[in-house]
Image (cartoon, rainbow, N blue to C red; front, top):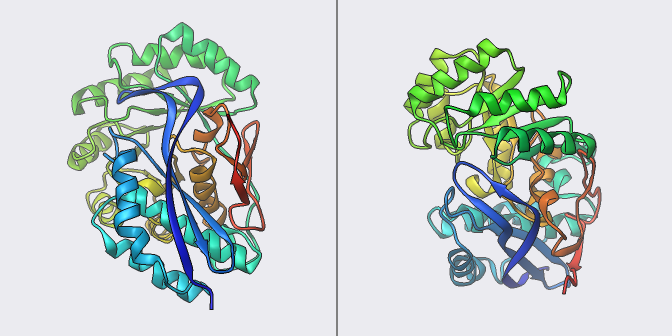
Length: 368
């Protein structure tokens, strides 16, 4: 019988090669909590809880306290022999505390990693419930931080040179100049590179409609506009969607299944962005993707400036339950280095996902 021996939470900070700037925040580091779960057979499972004050409200101190005080003790000593044990223990994690979705997602990912390692397969295969049909190479977009039009054009060209074909522009910092920013990037990269926008709650309802209609008139080839209004204003999201033609994506308005059903009921979005740090569980994320697809909503899976650990778990979700659109898994690409050895690997706009050994992580890196 294999049991869980130990749960450890280790805060860490990873420098970024380029500042990450949105309508909500600016950061030059990925600040996160790496979680390891050790079982009685000597295996170690990995997970991650990112600090994103402005979106999830979770902090390094809060996630660490949640894991060490509540989640760790709740799972320590439990059996982890098979997928039935995994489902039972993952359910314990979800019931142990309210919210704290990043901390829950970290422990949940580490549990999946342990079982996948024991089976000699990938986290994606465990999550999908089948060994075949699992993709080991995914495509990601790349974010363009908010900035001035000329600087954005230069950055966009650099990212295309790096191999990216889908650019996610951060807008919402100044509605009066957002269209100019998009036009500058489109002029720089030409018609064959996809551009999507993320306002990160930066517009009012009225500003959102005005800017999006101007984008439509300018015919700039925008794929969709993500989270144009504040997260709690789901009615406002629906109000904007009714008045524009460009597809609208819900991100901060859609944490878990309850939010998804509200969005469906109100007709508030054309797409949803599923993130582990919002929904708290790989299986919940999988079920949200399935539900969205069932009702005709398009989907991506996103990341929260996590390191290779958290993005690896998100990539496993996409590998198990493919999204309808290119997902947003570039967060770890921004890091100067990975805090761990192994795991996912970036090659241009592609991410290589391990097919065996769970998340494929074999220990902490020495980045001293």
